[in-house]
Image (cartoon, rainbow, N blue to C red; front, side, top):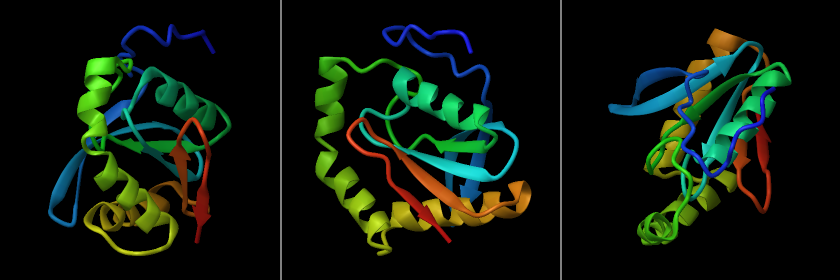
Length: 142
């Protein structure tokens, strides 16, 4: 796999862009690979070059990556001004991930579960989600 400059915008050209409508909400979702589905859930600052690199590792390990754009500008490296704007939403985003990890309900967690249910019959295998976070990687299987 070619090395990516993590300080440059990632075009995400090797991912298929899909507008996925579930539960009445459409989210741009980047899909790549073959094999069982893995939902890559991005935290702040969104789909950065680092997150895209992580998704490629998952794809290259034999999975189909489904990476919804939950917020931010996909492929853009983080900057302080953009980070401050994203941080303003931190409490909301953190609440969503805590709800997902605790198997609780919220609009975003419901949409992510619907995405997993959508991707599972298309790709096969166990439904799985991975959090693309610098400090931890969590997984949930059903």
